[in-house]
Amino acid sequence: MHSEHQDCIDACYQCAIACEHCAASCLNEDDLAMMRACIKLDVQCSALCRLVAQFMTLESDYIMPLCRICVDVCRACAEECGKHQHAHCQQCAQACRTCAQACLQMVA
Image 1 (cartoon, helix red, strand yellow):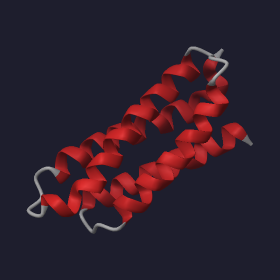
Image 2 (cartoon, helix red, strand yellow):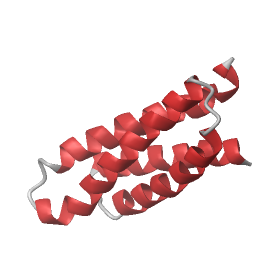
Image 3 (cartoon, one colour):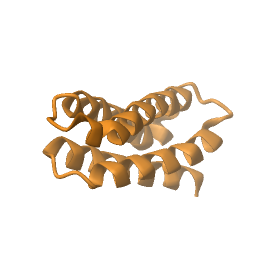
């Protein structure tokens, strides 16, 4: 039954993975203070994306409000990651933009 949400579920999980990789990679950067906001948003975005995917799989009545929040968090994370030239940040920013678009289509 959740197949109608499968594209969004996949985008959410891919975003979560990218965010977790980015956060872990940011911790290895030389200027950790510069990466603080990126790490914080990565962790928040990853947690939310996993929750949204889980709620879609469960066919929850709360999918739409969660997707709306996910759009905002993914966009914020993409904007922050996009400020950094590290490959992991750029990959994360792209995954966040993709997820935001998938969630936006869910609520449209």
